[in-house]
Image (cartoon, rainbow, N blue to C red; front, side, top):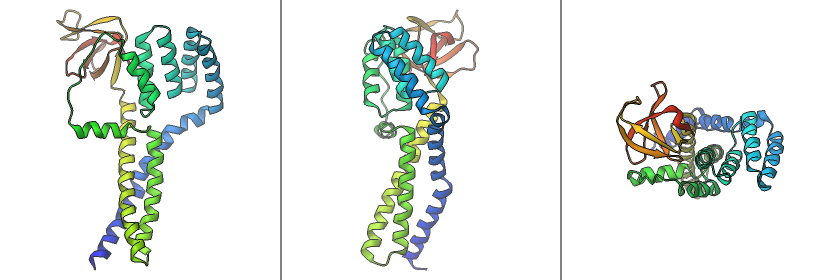
Length: 275
């Protein structure tokens, strides 16, 4: 078999694997992301949100909070509702709850600049100023790339790039003109990379949403202990709005947390709320 024929066979095999693998995962991610909205009825959500929005615009923040909370409990999670709920809490002076809902909105739609801006604004008003540990540049780049789009958008991008990859691959395998086959070859490689990146990004975001490993300190002040016990040594003090990572939740009534600077300790479970 000629080398070129071998390479064609290899590409065709990759195509078959992707049909049963990554493309299926991307399609499932798209289904997971859009199905709740379809089942709940987008029109109902829009009507309910408009009433809450009117209360917010009128300055009735407590009423808006109640309506947004009711909407979330009845219709399920939605980034726009979390975002407006965060705005309502921020306007009413409840900083920790504002940050919590901004974080939830950003988790569902990490590419939204307005959510990120308001979250950073709220964070700037917190007491704790924690310097994160340095990370390898490629880890930062990979995470930033994954957060450019929402999981649903990455899923659609993955499906579209995969379908175009099939077309380009077919043009390469069955094309008669050399120029067409060369162009189709490089296009297929590019689309294959896009498909893999989209799958990886969607999977990463889906994992973040499912793990719910981060939380926000809700109490004005709380002492972080060395052990999961009130008699434990006080290590440091955190204030409302501080974001922590939950390392261990196996102890009843206590959570082991880690800060972005690497410090660890135990907090009462009632002191934090999971994002």
